Image (cartoon, rainbow over all chains, first blue to last red; front, side, top):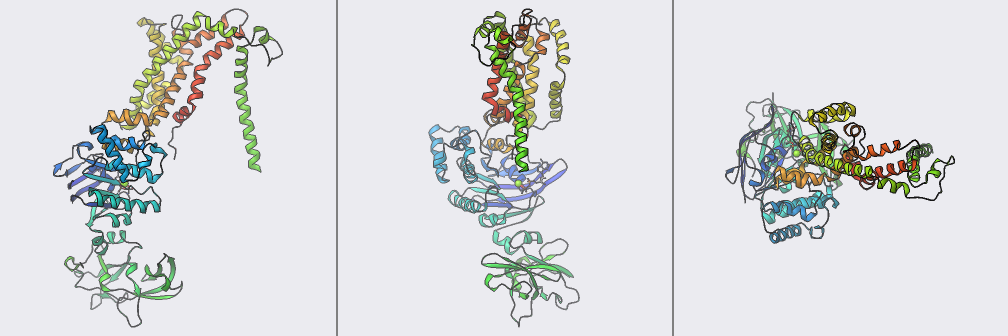
Length: 364
Length: 273
Ligand SMILES: Nc1ncnc2c1ncn2[C@@H]1O[C@H](COP(=O)(O)OP(=O)(O)OP(=O)(O)O)[C@@H](O)[C@H]1O
Ligand SMILES: [Mg+2]
């Protein structure tokens, strides 16, 4: 049981500000995912929670107690590393028991807890194995068992699945989700894989250059991205963006693009140019009589994805992707005419990339 | 086809090189068990009645026994000192970034590159002044410089090869820096570290020049004693000489045989992918 609170946390290496003014509250039992591109400071923040990295400024509190200067063991956290970091000279049993031995727990109690953790992760048959004689998935399971056996207040995961192949990654992702349902331990999970973030997180913290870009549930982040960066980072295939010129139109819309931008939903504030975004999945073939929100072009690429096909065409100088059911897929060279519903349009400031959506107008 | 040819040629070259090394050694081994007549005969003899006389003669000599004891004590102590002080030092250099780390590495290397005479001559003066010339203590201290520098030099990359995350995991598991050194870093790097220690042992066991200059009678080590066998008389006692060479080579060869995998892992400086 633990809650975390970050107040103005900063991290500097020499003159470089890696993290500046990071503020966040993580509730008890919450599963928080730090998501962001490589080098944005995810691991750095996680390592500051673990006590592996000094905190340059601000206050980090676990359960209300400031832990800035406490050693890892006094923070009641457990961490799972990307490359598993198993102790190579110990057996699986030794690896799982190692942290407990330091906690001055009786032999029998250790044995009981090691076996129960091993059982949770399906490692019963492997306890005597050398930790180096395991497959990647098994090693990661040992690493997770090593973390849960300590019954810590907070679990910290640093890209725990990125060394596994795709199939195993899906499998372990489900296991981690189950484990959290079962244990309900507060978790901070770092990844750059948006699928992991979307499926695991109670809340996603989207980071960019050491600063929070947006915090919210996976759904909020997907449906109401705060900025063009978030919109482009979340969702596959990636969102389409166009610059739209609003000048000269009586209604705030672009003649050329024939995209209506509803002033009731967006705070246009006299802007003459905006960036609009529309997800490929929200585009659908337009009927002949539809004239609003039309995007058209000649298909130049088709990627078959199984149920769907991603078609790509040029429109207003931009590559546009659209997902269509595979059996309805056009051919390369076909003229396509797509449309979308007003609700699915996003608009961003052309300079700052901030979303122009009126917050109160957001859909539920 | 061309690849096969070049492979065959390559193998041939390696085989010839190996033979060049092995034949004299093999001949030495044979000669150690030959009678004098069989050795000096102009036609080399592969088959002969073996004798243990040479080996027994060598082993029974007081000087050889004294030299053996000296060698064991001196090598053992200096290797121990090199390990006890060298390993923590190497770990500190490998793990904790400090300004002097590079200087330490340079110092250690410079010891290895200096000609031994350059070290030995000032040391003679020092030990004479201190009154410890021709003592085991003097040799142990001097050799400790060698074992220290060798151990540090080989142990730094060994410690660097231990993934940092393993130590961090132990840190999060609640262990302090000393516990991490003894419980994690040492055992995780053990293979390479044992290699480094064996290497430093072989180095001082075989050391000749410094021992020659720092000892006259009491503290003579086995290589010195063995070399003196050539001066036994006008007739070179080839059999005895060969037998002493074999005895001298046994410990390093045994180490090499048993620990070759450790050695190769100590001498490999880059992390394998
Ligand atoms: N010891 C250091 N000295 C200087 N800069 C550092 C140091 N460690 C990390 N950084 C910088 O801090 C930034 C954040 O690093 P961090 O490892 O937290 O990124 P990340 O988000 O975890 O990236 P990835 O997804 O690649 O793991 C990077 O730009 C990195 O270059
Ligand atoms: Mg990282």
